[in-house]
Image (cartoon, rainbow over all chains, first blue to last red; front, side, top):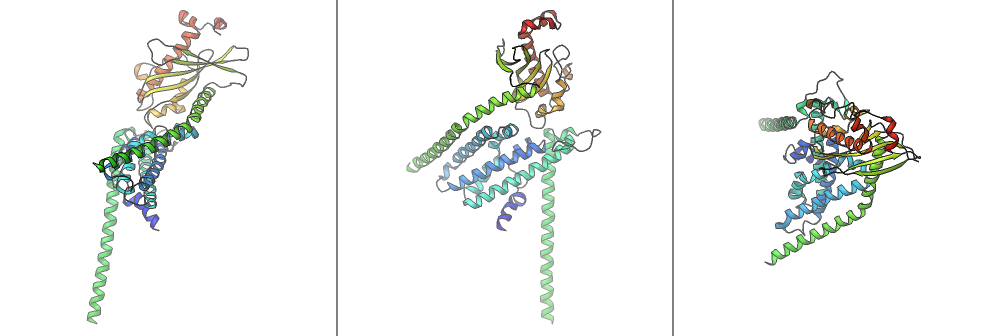
Length: 221
Length: 206
């Protein structure tokens, strides 16, 4: 239950992109098609989990003032390793993922989680944090890519949805479309959270009043 | 002072360990990467030229282009009696949106394109990356320098450009144009001179 809550925190309540506002570069750049978004998500998820683990493992050894260069070295090494290993043993996967792997270096979610979480928490917690954050990133980028691909290209996962007569709204797959869509997603996310919070408050208020009434009736009786 | 030295030492250790791990991974993966690169070339040739048989010989020659940084690699696919079955050109351009684009181009012995296979490219995912899709590639099938203008329609040519990726489409046209020109210039000089396909002289080309 606790583990699920930690992973859910990465996907929703602490979503790296929509709440922490990290990692916009890859999210905006690699969300033109769903397939690309999935590829990016998986490679980022792997690097995120691996770097979180190693950084958490050596967190007591790392001098506080030297932590940033240490993180850079570790994350860079993992990205290079992923690049080499996929090229050597999964060359067809590397062909479709090739462009995204170097992009992970500039994914500041990896760096942000190393700095904010893994360097202060234990191995297992960092593992769950990495998985949760990775999934949160994946969730955001895949939804964004789905919206952009469906509107801007009339396809989903390369399958045509509306037939030949549909005129795609090109702006959605161009860079401005990414900004527009992510803006709407941020707004929607905030709205949902505000509504949820209000409901929670109303519920608490109602419960308090109930308790008050109960008290009053007991006192009267 | 002591603290500083301690920090430097620790960072040094981290770097050494990272370098060692990377060196190890590099050493292990070096050979498989070479192999997959080679087999990729062979696979690409088999994709762009259909009907290659096991007995056929693939011979590669390098065409050195003047005023050009990239040499164009031509693979001749020879029948058993060493007559030409088809060609495969590894064509380059530097004009891609993300820099270099390398495409394997299959060409039959009448110098018509039989297939394209992108080998190396750094185009924008979802836009320029569509150069790998059949809808774009198939428009070149059966085309040659004689019946096709390898420029995008915007520039007065015949290529139907990818939406929102004119630069990529233009670059592919450039690569094909230079690749085909190099091939024709080196393997069929007569065509350039007379301006017509002269099949009777094919014998001399081999």
